[in-house]
Length: 161
Image (cartoon, rainbow, N blue to C red; front, side):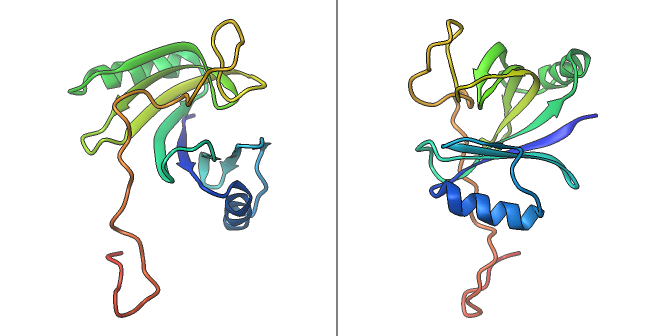
């Protein structure tokens, strides 16, 4: 069974962990100095946040699959899209080793389809185990920051939602 994946870049990890733990009524299943992840069953989602210097907001969306066959099925779907599909086999990112495919939607949001193979002790690493400089995860083109439809408390300036 597939699981929706959402990754949000945040400025204040501790405050964000508190917020999302309260919202989900659950503590993170993984907590690092720069990252936290909730593997929720209600709703069925892999929700991750990180404070690694990226622009705050939506980092990427994804579909986490449970096995190689489901990943192959997702890759077949992605190949039907107009656009490039980036393949990353055995890649190290977000404290996990995974096989994955990336595609970018028409608005610029990166979508990751992946099968997690194992956990690793660092956010990202090269094949030799050395820490990767800079960020990992979302390949070019960079994702667009989602904005515009956010409810506003000020009634003089209502949000669109």
